[in-house]
Length: 472
Ligand code: GLU
Image (tube, rainbow, N blue to C red; front, side, top):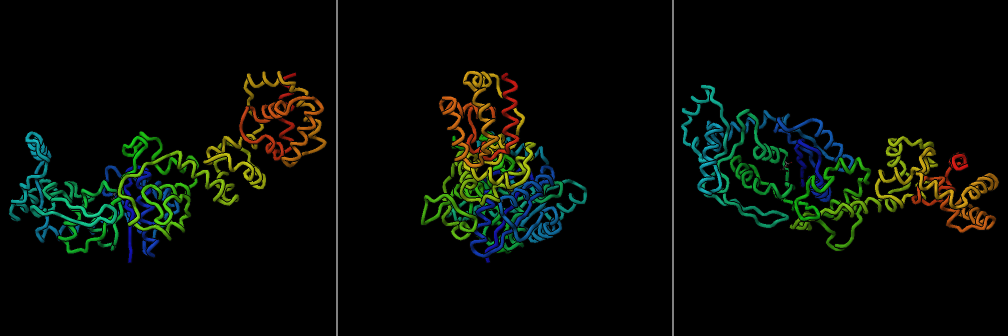
């Protein structure tokens, strides 16, 4: 049975790179009919926050990643303690009484000699009696894992291939801090083993941790899972994707009104492509579940391209989501902007004609303003243009004809505009420009013929009369 997990630390918002890890881990489990587990890794009490946990869960739900089991490491301290006991008793771990200052001195020493630092192993030599005496004397201590000398730990990574790391690179490492809290490298093993995780899917920044974890699996007699380390995501400048590259949290994209399915889809393409159709870009979640395999994940870094993501969000708005769905998703954004949206039938009619003009729901707020907001400023220079273009005549005639013909389709609006052109002997451009400025306060934006066809008659009259009042 395939069992995978996503194990975020609630020390910040969900980063795009972690979201991709979650997605790959999720897709792999679903592809194999297995289980996907969410585990909040909050053993670092200083930096973990419940608010972050809540935001991360919200982001995962928004992305459509549902989990089968949920755990929080801070609820499991008793379990970890029993395994620390076991390691101590069986001689795989020992208490270390070295003080911060002593360790700092060792570190400086190593630096002076120009060698990589590793703990000297001084406290390894203490006899159990000596150690007990110091503990009872109240001396503060950490617990270190006893790393077997000279071993090469080798594992086959499902993405990166064979990886071999010599334990001399790290030395005896801490598994319990002096405040009694267990460290990541230790609890991750206990949890992955007890939760029967078959495949550990995570970022490649964890590769150096993997041999430490394998040693703990072995010491406790646990079966070692398979590992898949995913390459990093880079910004366009080829450095690791970070805040410098702009929005890198899922929350930022959620709040900016990107389509969640598009973000899910786009993140999948950062390091994965369909084996039979590598150029294909648009996939539903169901299709991805059907197709996704870890073996098809590229082992070299992927480059994040915000424009591409934005484009894809637009594709989902224009072509993928049903109109109903576009309406219900854009609605909260319009309401937040203070628009009086009224009935959703009107909104749907508007979207039918405008959904191809924005890529995100926050962009829709700007694009759709003329359909919902009657009160707006017309900049002075545009008012000037109106005066130049025989606009009073155009507007007056338009208003008159509008009452008679009540155009409600683009065709009817165009016919009306033609009548005005002919009667006043003006160019089409002059008619459209005048109407556009009067009705939207801008020189560009949504199709003016569509706006006139859909906007309630009272709104049109209100806006035009206001201009006429101002000009005269
Ligand atoms: N809490 C770790 C992180 O967020 C998880 C690493 C792992 O998946 O083992 O990086």
